[in-house]
Image (tube, rainbow, N blue to C red; front, side, top):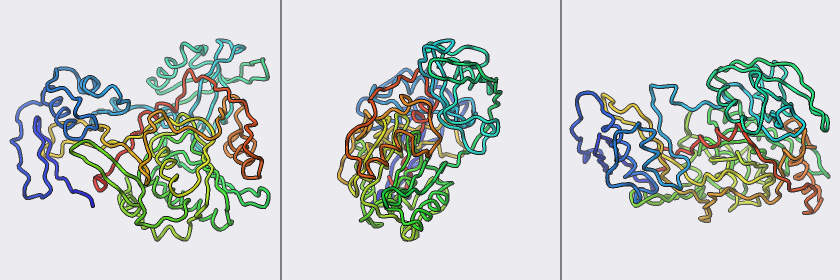
Length: 460
């Protein structure tokens, strides 16, 4: 059962009620909105919703900017709560993948001109960089004519985002020899990503193995995800390799949808997840039916409509990395009570918490900020959670220790090859070294860090 909360946010007062008629409307402030009013609104909101509300100060300096104010009052364990202005696009974070259509890592490479090299991890299919010939696995050694070093990797990348344009100096690497290539100009523009990058079917020792590279939990593209599983079902898939190695998360309903398409033994009344908050927010146990009913976009998803495309497998192989976060981690954790999850790659980011969205809903609106404070700890049907340091894989493999990177879905990719080995009965012997390559900059890390799992009002 869910408690319906009607919320009125004032400059220094929060009123909560279970019945609309009980809501007492506070007197609306008049005159110009002051920084004090904004920050008091933030503090009052945090006192009710914030997971660590018992650590908030009784009083605080209300003169700093809202961003600085939040930074000062939030708990030291909080890495992800955020605030931004709805009317100021410059306050929104910029991400390389959604601005330029590429994601990359910069790593040490002693024979490169500056001792570092950029490795392209992803190119959004259909994007301008894709039409320019950029591909996963290619290298570059300079941004805007500035040679990459391990020291300037993050700075040059941020300047590239700020400028909304860049020139990448491409390169080839043959053993210890790095050869300069052509300069590729890039212009930033808003990019929508179709999260199903690749789906395929392979026969492995008479087993039908489905592979899916899924890079975001975006309810706008649920039809594409369902279509992929329809094809897997038609092909008679008995094994699934789910590639979430760069997936930063997204919709809670999207995670429940993916689970329902994979796992056996669940129905609409089965427990999807458990949320635990502070003394105000309490604890929630949510079913698949309830979660599917409140996607971030589009109408409710019927559990029964998914039945024709459900694989109901006994196990799933999930490929992960340090940018696997939020709803992607939720998927890994919430599948475990229902099936065997074999995780291959590197440990995930460690977002075991979720936020709620807080806006000033008065008319006229006075506070033009959106606040997302961490509100709930997340757990699966067995009450298992607490993966603040990430979810540890069963088989630890770093793709960057096996350069060059191969195309998405290539069966020789080290993470995919390990899954295939296990499916074909290759045993548990680890055939790859456990060398972990240091990322001096990883463009997808910002997406993973900034993409907060948001609990819809219907699940609170």
